[in-house]
Image (cartoon, rainbow, N blue to C red; front, side, top):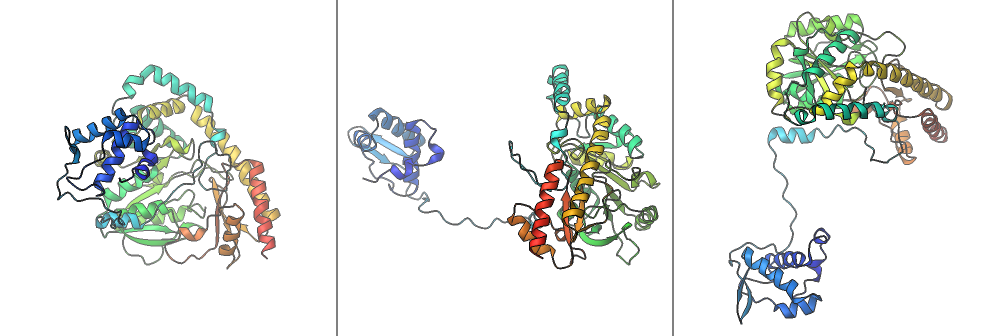
Length: 482
């Protein structure tokens, strides 16, 4: 008799009732061809003895297979496989065929992923990851109180489908904040609340670019923007940055869209000078191009007054402003926003329904309460002071333990670019990772050959002691490999 023991060892079925496990194993064995059509299965008494189970359990399993059409039971004769002989059987697993994607789908898959570093729940270890706020410094109790209050007040209404443009109260709060803090010229009707700044980039690429049209990106630049525009079928033109930001003085083909991070260039960290901003707006006007201003962490300016947004200088309505709560509040909130010119609002709002409909209504409402109650401004002030202190500790630790490294633009943000001597980054990166330091090379942010070597180092999410300890470890690696 064919043994079912191997089929019964399936861990995925272990939680099922025993008769379900047996019927599942018998079904798999039949489909694998171990009992051809018309063949007789063991008697229930015999199989019960073989498996060490009650006969009633086997009876239940056989009855289930009979109901499904796998068996035909004849009184006094036995139980027979009743599948058609022409049924294709699963005789042996074969390697899956390569997935066939659409041309656009393949292009998206080929871009790779732009993933934020993640830590599991309960994980304590933190590293020099870029773009991470300190979740431990967040006012958890206050947020929980606001969450409970809003749920008690409007829970049933917030469980319904929402406006794809976003909760009106949150759009009003965002517009007010942007006008005061970033100089953005907008009305609440121009604000779209989204799940992420990446979604904003995807929306802009899909709505503003046809396949093959040209987009300028900073070189080096944000990988998420590169991926979003490639997904839209854009032809990309990397435009280099220098100490004044995006340098558009060269001879570059006319763009349809320009992506930039003017307040704090990602990843190198410089701010775009006023002459460069005016030149960029003039180039966009001459080309009839849109500008996407990604102000991903413009709230965190340390050594100078906060620079107003590029959008505040735009007289033509060509700048689309993108911001996020992920850097100011916490990453898993999954709330971001974009400010679009009035003539694009309806198109973007409608297109948003093709992505995910709307953002979480409850979290939108709590965020609106957090802002309206003055808690957002207070939290931002505290985090600005906290992150500035941690930036200072990072710079002091690098100067003490890693004199071979240099930092040029460090007056803003949650991270800074750290430069290595030519030819040393790759080897030091390998040694660092072996010692538990997942250093992030600047080379990965270049579309072409990099003209700088170094790493992007985050400091905002680390305690003072964690910063000192990890830079001390890095210093020992550099000294021992000299």
